[in-house]
Image (cartoon, rainbow, N blue to C red; front, side, top):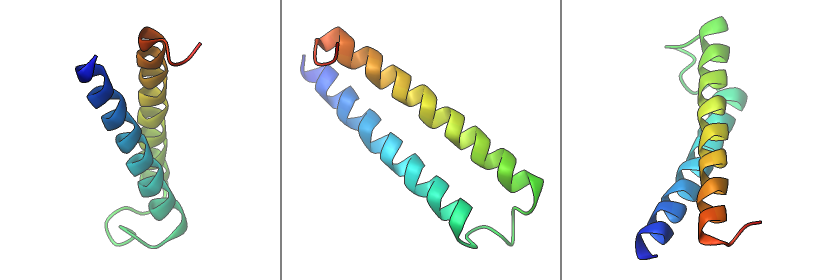
Amino acid sequence: MNNNIVNIALSIIIILCCLTFIGFIAFTDLLSDRIAGNKKYIFLVIISLYTILRGFRLRKMLKDVKLFK
């Protein structure tokens, strides 16, 4: 049970970090000198897909612990 709580907490932290990073990349000039144009949007899509995958894995973990139906 303790291992599941750690995995759930880390998944939530990673999802929040990814969402924050997506926001910084999309709405600021962060990394604009290194990534420009289509590469920037492809990178945003990849990070977004990873965030969605982590969300599904978090949902599965919560179902296994019976915290989410």
